[in-house]
Length: 254
Ligand code: G
Ligand code: G
Ligand code: MN
Ligand code: NA
Picture: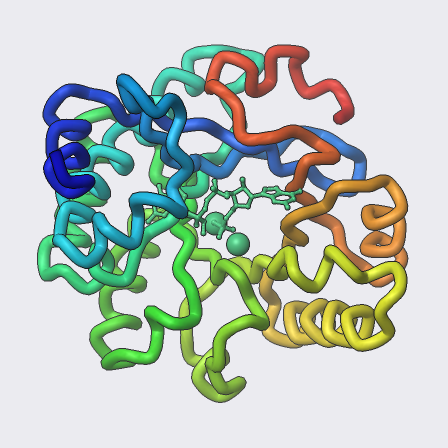
């Protein structure tokens, strides 16, 4: 069977699952998690998204897959809402360009929220710069419709794309995610330090929260903190993991 055929079957036979990666504040308190899709393949084992998301996008399978991801992550939010230990957690979802630009996107998000009873204020949608180069009026309009219900927006992999600053200023965003490529060599690369400092200053000027991705060591975290970063995600705090493990130790400092 071709990979496309297998991917279709993955959807109908419930072989997809979501893992969640912790996001923490400067005190190491768990604030929420980013949902990351995995494919539990009957023969190949756990297939990472880098190996099937591009195919899902080119075949259009990303549409039903994206709806499943939205629904499942919202179900998780609704379930955490009933657990005193996890009630305040947020969930971030990666939205692909094709999914976001589909005419039904806003309706799909609202329907996932309504069907699951998830709190829209706890839902964050991650967009990447490359998907923002389209019709800006239509883009802002979609974002505003969802923001009116409380949904928040993050700009993922920030710094790796090519959005102009004037463009960025117009977008109704809530958060920038510093791409992990800048965090990786932060400790010994002066350019990366300057870039991170600039992104943090930009966040401050535009009143956007900034979270650093790919934080793997305490030294990286300390350097980020000295530069003024207050939110972190990365292996230092946890790999993407099954939902049951998220917050299993309460809001204990990670
Ligand atoms: O988890 P991992 O590092 O392998 O993810 C690789 C890439 O796949 C990342 O760029 C991530 O944004 C993307 N990805 C992971 N989960 C999802 C998802 O649920 N939807 C979309 N559209 N992309 C995802
Ligand atoms: O593109 P996006 O930011 O959505 O992708 C997140 C991806 O980054 C996930 O696939 C996740 O597995 C990976 N990731 C998360 N934390 C770290 C980290 O600390 N180091 C590295 N190298 N990758 C990470
Ligand atoms: Mn992401
Ligand atoms: Na990213």
